[in-house]
Image 1: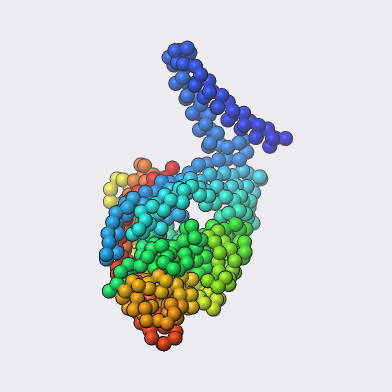
Image 2: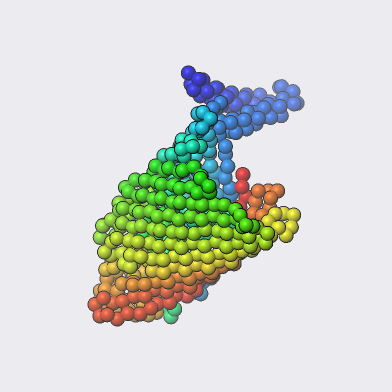
Length: 480
């Protein structure tokens, strides 16, 4: 009965606000006196603000989010350009609606709805496309029950247990700008040394992920692919949102754990530890997850023959900070394991290291100086599958060693990738502006890449190095 009244009161409040606004539209200020409308608008604004902050009488509503935009410059050795772009999907401008309600002194219920706004995603722009408008998209929608003594159960579209497992150990204040995921340059076409740039529309190869939002072959991201869900972002290879059931334990002596099951089928688990002592602050995490074929939110998880790609990912990482000096270090290691005949090599390794200094040099807020290094070895499996012809589909006719090999092969499908390496490093500066809940940032990143190949019919093999890619990305995040 009371629950029905709460809905009724909320509905009446909304209708009252609408009615007041309609009244203002139909009556002039002269009819009601000079101060009428200002007072009325103030009351409507107060009503709307109260409704947004408090929800109904039992369940709260909080609206938060951020806006993220920047200017991106790149040079691929052949072409350079400047775009207005934003961080990739996870860090794009977004709004979240969250709330809780106390059931008793130990248990609460809650929910989260998260929507992001995508118009020029730095992961998907490239030499041939300065926009990647995916519009307004739902990122999360789930509810939970949480007990302080027993833990938390959540159901819906959400981050599974291993999503961002090591990334979220990064408490340095530079997570948004510098993290283990390659959120920029993934769709940049590669130019073989001694050749011309590959096609960024995928050539005759298939798109990684689903066709609408995939990263095409012939790009940097095709050498940074997560076989778990066929997306070229590297390192956070269980990082997509899924329809799942998740359990999180309470924290015991700094330790906590999570486990989840997702549709069709994926299983994940994570263990975390965080603490402070001896003048240091630290946080660590390790996780493992498996994805067993079929479908996920990004499309079919199958090879070019239609067989399921069963893949797993293990990761470990953490952050340690010396509090007195404000010096810190963050690291990540991840390894893919893939059970599929045409995804070879099945294992791929990912390394990410970041170090910095975060002093308070001015009255605006903390200043962060950042240096980073990354390397991915043999993380091309789902891009250039054995016997698919995708490698020559991407680079055939582009010159260089690989173009010659594809031209000499009896069949395009004879030429297969057998190894790859992507190495990157970068520098960055982040300035926090506490008074505006804002940060300004600029970062430079450099990428080197190469791929090893073999003609299975003749045994001829070689290595193709690609021209370097340099990027400068500067922008801001403002939080609300």
